[in-house]
Image (cartoon, rainbow over all chains, first blue to last red; front, side, top):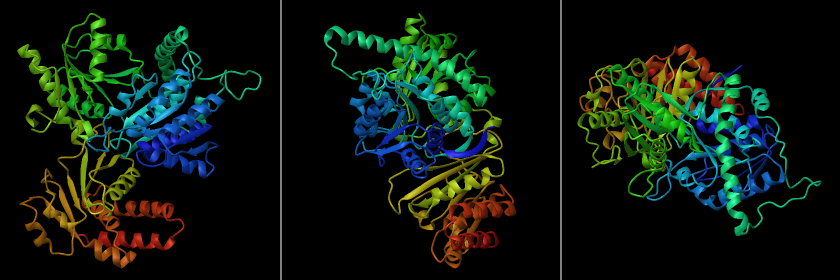
Length: 393
Length: 201
């Protein structure tokens, strides 16, 4: 039985954590963090979970403590946002290369400067090559559902990698919306017990974690890590199928919205996808063949599947909520173009940067992108292929 | 850009949109979240969210609500609200509070002044105008100035999104939960809601 509720995105994730009841949570408890550790620490203090909550003095320490706990054999997690993730940077790579399936609840907010606290994806996009699985969410329901599925993906024997569940700062994290929660016992059964094969507190089997790898081994270690990350794609699908069985809600590697026959497609991540759906319905009502592909799994990047899903699109807009400072594309634009090129497809791709530092994205802004795409198709003149959306003059 | 659409689809036009204007510390954001909460209890889909600017006491703050019978997918700020609530009348000098406000909708202003005086400040807004003296009500019922409780009752009354009876019942329930340790506060808040329902004009 699902429970009809209304929660903010922060509350939704904290409740998923409560239902999972992990062994250890370490977090830096104040700004730049979010309400997630704040709410969860009250669950811990009230005895609603058995979790050892460790408030630490920095995000670097938060992830270090989670790494230590996870290596010891405890199911661990942390939560952060914005420059908090940046301060974890060094340890992100350590968690991934040691194959520790830690879960991280990320609220996507910009990195300074200029000093700004609002939503964009510069924090997690900066960490995209650290070896973590990354899953993005459109709304509070999705971030809750994704978090419930997180450990099943991360801990799978063919994966064993840390996972980052992302949602848009303030836009969903601080917004109260309707949500359907699962029963506590349903989540508990779905997630199951954590039974690591190798762990430091196992007295019968001594091991070392994080040793020095000389040049003769380092490259093989990285290659093995890549293989595990690639395996995550299949596991994400299997876990999603099982999750649909208990929740009735279906998830894939990405979501296609009115995409199959669309001439004009948008590829987008996060809360703006919901806004895009309203724009698409309005444009479809006007007879425009527009559609969208919303990224769920960004790491590993399901390039072949995305290229196949976009095969009928004549003009594509890739929407990046971060600036990569390479002067030709954002991270999503680069991935999508790479996937299309490898698949031998050559549609026109326009890469937009939008929503930086919390710049609002309204239905009309999304519609203007489709108007651009339709215009490009008519005139056969793409013009500038790397653009900023709703930039003030 | 509007002209790009020839018609609005059903998914958009059935949403009631509300914008709150207050100052940091007055509880406009809390009021928007409380409003989402109480309307949720009637079975609707709701959104309640703040727009964060510079975070400091006294700075202009905006918060929003959407209400619908269907799932709400849009995640943007609100530019064409059906209702606007002005928690602090000194904002008239710095914020264009009626911007985009529907003529078929209404504006509610927290003020002790006459409605005629307020209308003059609204740049020719043609819709309905309501006033409520939230300071008087708050001081009378709570002994302190918390304008968000009266403004919450005012938007329920003016928008008619739920019956006053259901509203009072749900709020009693919610206050009992929130102020379990302080029963006196529950009584004061309920009094503020009832007074507002009578006095909004």
